[in-house]
Length: 174
Length: 250
Image 1 (cartoon, chains in turn red, orange):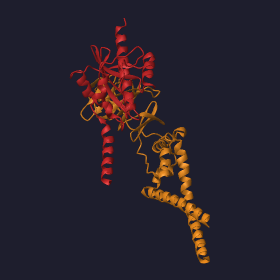
Image 2 (tube, each protein chain N blue to C red):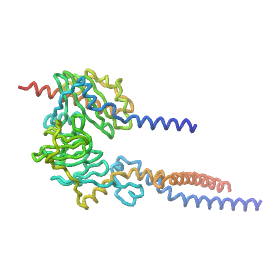
Image 3 (cartoon, each protein chain N blue to C red):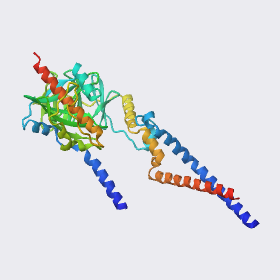
Image 4 (cartoon, each protein chain N blue to C red):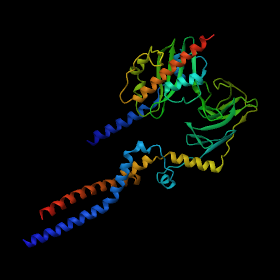
């Protein structure tokens, strides 16, 4: 009985310890996203309408006044952060021609909910686009026990798509 | 028959005495358990998790010590690091960093350097950006400085680099005429406030109530003490019921 309890406790503590971690360095993510040759970083200032839209997507004031991105032709890559429950989750997002190409959890700092880093979850976002209401054009299935992490990733996917769209509009403007 | 009755009376009195002793002893524990239990039931409403203990004796009891403060002076005041927490004057900054390496004001920003990143703030204390190795910042940073022209310079173990106003582009630069940021002790009154804030932020009222409720506030023996109190309450209930049953039989 004691042995079984000890094993269960050990497994539980190990799963908490395993949830946290750096799954890919941001620099590696960018190299992978741009086939080993990432473009120089650029920045987008979160002011005026962009700030208001960002706040609406995140549901709170953005933590910083500018975000950085890497763009070449129709593709842009974003490294964004959003708090799941207590700690920020660092996520890399690649957008291609207005559609989400890939999303990846780079650093997970929460003690639970790291299931969102697995491909079975992140692949749901592939090809997703933003509707006129700035929500995803598809339903993302949640994961029980990881609701807040799912919510954080969904927000970041929407934000990357919105910012990509904003850059497109800015470049298209005469 | 009278002998049996007398014996029964003595036993009943003895039972009553034990019940009273159990009752007196348990009263203290019942009061602690009931009060802490009541408060814990309303943790959210009373915001107990967000309220922090400022009582030094209790913070000492928990062994919450403040690390040695480390400060740099800037036009906006002092930037101080306590542990991984950063403060601009007496205001805690939301970002945490491992090791503070310097502070400088340039390109219209207040720039704070840790060993792994640069934090750029507006003079009002709003975070503009956190720049790290993913955007090409040379790390680990050993020192932060500025050229006489106001360009930012970072020193790593290997070289020194000058950055542009985006903080994304860095080029090697010779180590000449750089004004390196030097640590500068903050006023004692500010340090005292920060230490109090740091220690207080480490212990919530909810934590203290939970520890009082479980007995953990007294360490491992406290848990046994609360176990003993639980057994005492059980005995109180048993002797009470027994006493009532005996009197009814009489």
